[in-house]
Length: 93
Image (cartoon, rainbow, N blue to C red; front, side, top):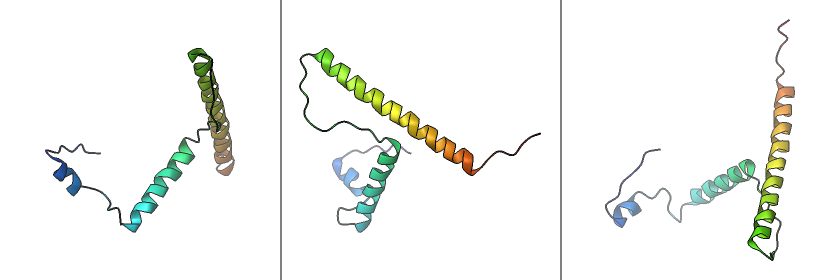
């Protein structure tokens, strides 16, 4: 992706990718959100949490990060198993 330099705001506005009224913009945004859901799938429990200290906050955040990582590992293992079952490697025997 090339890097562009602009000398003024007007130059930036002229290069805008999609107009706000463009019906394609909604589909592009939806595609970006779908891609993010498929790749990240982060889960943070809803609600407001109070913590007695910064250490408690950090511990809870680390716990959520660990849960997200474990679920990612399980999901990737399932995807790899499904891919391996769909296209088995022939015996080299």
